[in-house]
Length: 295
Image (cartoon, rainbow, N blue to C red; front, side, top):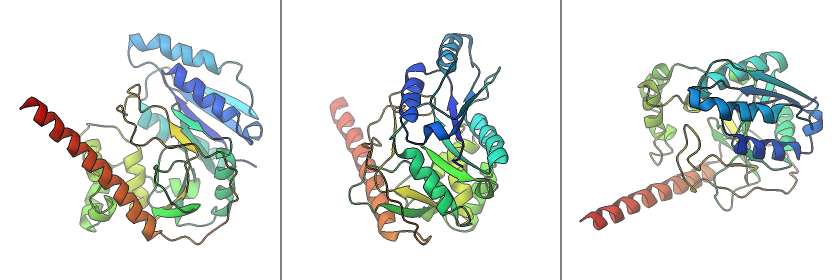
């Protein structure tokens, strides 16, 4: 049986439409149960867009079944995903998770379901990711420590390690002297993201999911080429700013997945570090350019 899909939507009808159309084109869509969690409006001005999204969900077809759960109040993305994933995973033991700005390749569900079966009993595997950064020369699949959040899947046995307490997670990372590794040799600012979550500057469930799996020495399986793109990096989302740095090209080639031993790919880790370092250098170049213009 295929894993159920949990889709989280809010007030972006155009993005939601793209996500649904691409998902319907997946080869396993007709054999998959789809659960859609529609968050309630945060402000009165959000009501029309929330209702527009909900109208899209009426009479939706192309799946084995469609269940829509409409929230009366605004839960926010973090609570919606944490509670929604927990609900579905308690019913079905595993789940494929999407948000309203994730467009999938036609082979996305096949990749997810195949690998969910491959690694079902591998306790050290926490997550299957459909997204990978736009880095050339990656292997067909590989493992890195932690978890990811753009088009992903997991099992009940792994989700039970999710810890919503960012403070405890950060203290443990610091106590074990793991912050450098957590930050990909300090080429990223994941620790700052976690600190910001603790201080209420963001409400990221994803950084807590990554930290939870990282601390439990668990791994995420990635594809060598991305099977999803995030259309929300256009300034329309609550948590994403405008950026093209993470835009990948969808891989439409069917995957001949092979199970591999679970261990981190050190070469790919270095490639990720190089990618992050390049983003940082590009950021500082822009800052210097702005300062020159000002003075």
